[in-house]
Image 1: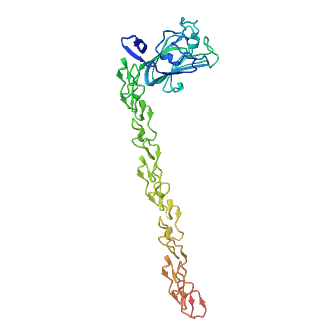
Image 2: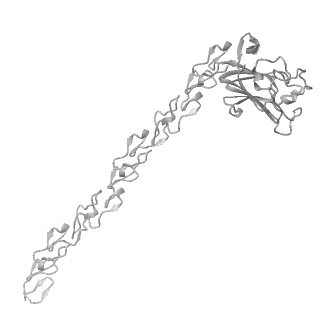
Length: 426
């Protein structure tokens, strides 16, 4: 009959009539601890002429500390409300009816799995008494789900007044009303949910979205994200922290650019290409950085190649007398004026008496009879045996007839006794 599969209800006392289908009718069911042949399917067969637990229309489970029953709606559907008819034994439903004590404290869940903990709690009785608990009862729960689960327990002492010491599934009928097509709402489930609703789902009566696709917000998800720095469902997720200016794509959260030193679609990666830094890691490290490496954020060199200094190694050695990495190595000690090549450390000249690239290859002049800068000046001609001091060129002794530091003076008197500066003739 039409009354078994459809429910017509007036919303808020108005003139609008809404028609929902009983989606639980003859669906697959399960219950805990079935008693004899009082199977779970009796609660979805559309029959509730007899409300006796010993008739043919009601479910019965063994009385124990917990009771659970569920129906599989075969798909995730849009639910409006749930109707439950509990057993009465065809007696008046009042405080004297023994079934009221087992009905008290029940809960109803909607879930996408067979586990009620994965779903949402539609209703839990915490206030009814044996005199006030309604039967039948309609539970409004506009939600999407595949399984409707009835649950009761007597596991926590002390029990409230009027509660039985055990409970069971004394259900004569459970009906689940709503729209079988999840993307519809309204009168006769004939109106499509707004286009930007998440998964095409909306409130079964009002048509407001239960969530928005990424990049949209508002009751009907008609507004694009206008709040800078946010994206995603209902524009509620902050852009990744390393996005340039904190801005990202309103739909998928990818950054339009990265802060210095970061890369990747969401700027979550440090610079992965050696030798680069800055925005999107696109700027080469300064050319004088040692090994081409620098700080990925500000581009400062970790060290400089020989002969350069400063944060970005752009300066030659500023302190005279130094060369090499970060200009930290003193020039060779015999370099003329302590000056040398800032990279190689070779002397531009040697102090008197030294030769070689670094003025250290030979201490003293390599060739006898020379002195001075790079040992390039011949000793004075009258030095004995052509030998002189390698620095100042003074003769160690003079040939006969000459005198003076460089043997440049001529002796007036000859004498067999020689002095440092030659022979004297008297």
